[in-house]
Length: 296
Ligand SMILES: Nc1ncnc2c1ncn2[C@@H]1O[C@H](COP(=O)(O)OP(=O)(O)O)[C@@H](O)[C@H]1O
Ligand SMILES: [Mg+2]
Image 1 (cartoon, protein in one colour):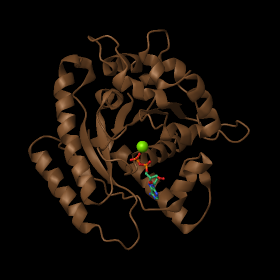
Image 2 (cartoon, protein in one colour):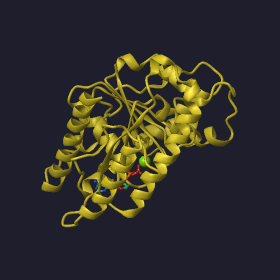
Image 3 (tube, rainbow, N blue to C red):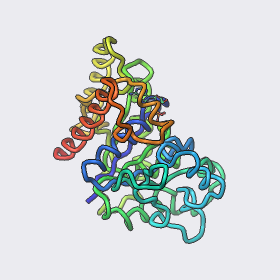
């Protein structure tokens, strides 16, 4: 059965997209079958993996974007999966095993203009369709925006694990606090829609520190985060297995360059120490996520 994982935090710019894209790539490179959903209307993950030209075609026509599964019609998740999404300049497949369901800017309409069926919230409709494809994957990953509005809810409702990318600063601690509060509200609100076969709602399993600069001491913000985590564990508001991840992803210019190149870092192949370091961090993160699954 696929592990279904959402990356979310109430703070933007902390590394949700770069961590999940590079995690997905490392897992695929290690032979896992991975499906990544882009649930952020800003479309960063989609533009990154498709590059602008391919993504523009979808954005201009709206054919193939995740929003289309919510409009009445016949488009289903299985119809819009882009298989082996990462391509070279001549269309050659560079990373077999990494599939994407992209978004475009129209996903924002899910929050305001979407009416749908009141008895079937978008997250339920999404969950029903996801079941048609989930057996084809080892990992299904949801890149969420910094909120728990409708698009995020789709990922969170279907996920069984939540990870919280963070920077070691006070604002990330606030983001985490807000996330846990809002998550609890959403889980209560959506409880009546859960079927027995779905298992319990997803809880926070981990905090992943990202963009750590060399020489900067992060012990104090880490300790504060650990204290908050302990408090939430005692209150059973996060999973009993939740932890601060040992892997911390270092700050590296290659991460920003990789976006411009339209490649995950594992495919950039530029061997500077800084690149090697951050690539090792992503690989270590992938191993730690795999290992954490053994505890669940
Ligand atoms: N390890 C890193 N080193 C350097 N820059 C990073 C790193 N991780 C993320 N970034 C940059 O920080 C910005 C925000 O990251 P992003 O993953 O888009 O965050 P979010 O999805 O949480 O908004 C992006 O410009 C990204 O390229
Ligand atoms: Mg993002």
